[in-house]
Image (cartoon, rainbow, N blue to C red; front, side):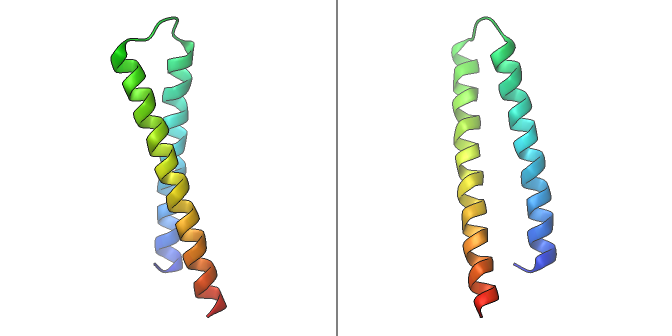
Length: 68
């Protein structure tokens, strides 16, 4: 992945994180939650874990790249 690809991916991930945060905020604002709501919350949590893992992997790859 070159620098332009990394930059584009980071922009996309940042937007996705903001979207997930907004959805989680809306969830918290509700007084009650259906099973579907709870399932969606768990899916968002899992996606955030995936994003975290992807960012860590990108960091490792970039570190190896710069070490040469």
